[in-house]
Length: 89
Length: 408
View 1 (cartoon, rainbow over the protein chains, first blue to last red):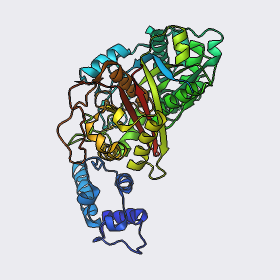
View 2 (cartoon, rainbow over the protein chains, first blue to last red):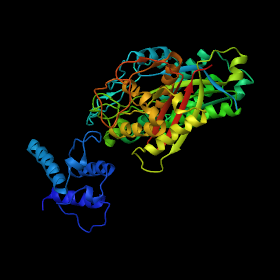
View 3 (cartoon, each protein chain N blue to C red):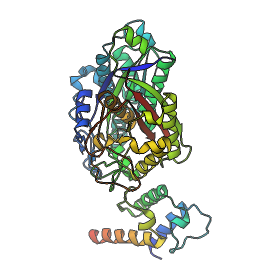
View 4 (tube, rainbow over the protein chains, first blue to last red):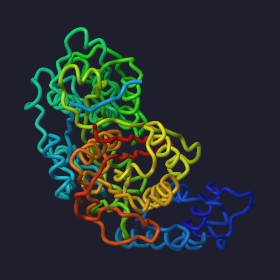
C-alpha cells in the first residue's frame, strides 16, 4: 500500500459517519455518510498531511461526482503529490 | 405601541461613503468589487492569498473624519460606524440634548468587531515576537466598540450594546432597536451595523471554507461560484412617529415588522424552513400580507446553497405571490459585508421603497433551474414599491428579516 493510499484511508476512516469496521477503496463517499462539510474537512486534512493544494470550491465542485469513491480520492491526491515531486526534483 | 419612522440614513460602502453616492451607484448597477488593496498587510514571506477579489471601502481616509489623536482607539470597524451614524443624525436634523439623550438607544451589529486590531496584535505577538501589545488593543477590538464609540461621539445615553449574529448581526440590531422604539422604552434609536475584517488571516479563514468566488458574485445566476467578502457600515435614525412629528422631521419610510428564527439544524447549511418562518414573522409583526410586498432585498450571497434555499423559502413564505416579487441581491455590487450586510442592505431596501426603484442583481448570466424567481437581472427597475423586506441569514442558522413600508 502506498503512503497516499494509507493516508487517505486513515483520514476517511476518521471522517466516516456510518458503522463500518474497515474502509475499502471501492467504498463510495456517499455510502460512508460523508456530507459536503465533511468533504471540506477531509480536503483540509489531505492538504495538511501531504503538504499539497487541492483546488476545490464548494459551490462548483461536487464531491459526490468528482470524488465518488475512496479510490478516486487516492487517485486525485496521488496525481497532485506526483506533480509536486516532479517539480521539486 | 408606537409607529416607528426612519428619519436619517448613513452609509460607508464599497460604492461610496454617503447614502447618496451608494444609492446612485446601486441604481446604476455599478460594481464595488476589486483587487485586495495594499492596505491589507500581506507578509511577503508568506504564501500569497489565493483569493484576489474583495469589495473594500475604497479611499477611506480616517483623517477626513477624525482627529489624529483619536485614531489609536478607533478601529476601522468603529470608524465606519461613527461616520455612518453622523450622516444619519445629520440627515435627521436631530441633536441629542438632554433629556432626549437619555431616551435614545444605540444598538449596533457586527460579526467580529475590531478584526484589524486583533490581526495586528496577533501578528505583533506571535510573528514579530514583540513583547508588548499596543495599549488600546482590547477596547479597540471589543465587539461593542462601534456601539460605544457612537454613544461617546454622538452623546447617546440610553440603552446601548452590540449584537453579534454573524451575517445577520445588523438586521438583528435594527430589529431590536425598532422593537425598543415601538414599545416606548425609548423615543429614538441610532442603529445599524458595521464590519471591517478584510485582513490577511481572515481572508485565509474564508479560503478554508471554500465558498468564495474567484472573480464575481453572481447571486441566483447559473454559473455562480460563491460569495465575495465585503465591508462597510450603515446606520439609521429611528423615532416614534409622535417624536418625529413634534419636531417637524421628514419621514423617509416606516419600519413595519421584524421576524427572527433559528434553524436548530446545521452550522453552515441554510434551511428554507427557518428562513421562511423569519419572513412570515416579519410580515405578521407588521400586519402585512404577502400581497403587500413588492420588493425583496435578498440575502443572496451567490453561493450554490444559499440562493437555491432562499428561493425555496420565498416560495414557502409568499406562495403564489412569490413569482410576482422583484427579488434582488445587492451583494452582487457590494459583496458580503457580513455583520454590516443587513444594514447596508436595509438602507437599499428603504431607498427602494422611498424612490420606487428596485436595485438590480448584477453579473446575472442566466436562469438556474433551481432559482426561478424574478431577480431584477443586471438593470434597476422603476416600479411601484409600497413595502419591502430585507433578508439576512447567518452561519449558525440564525435568520432575521425586516419589513419596511412607505410612510403615509
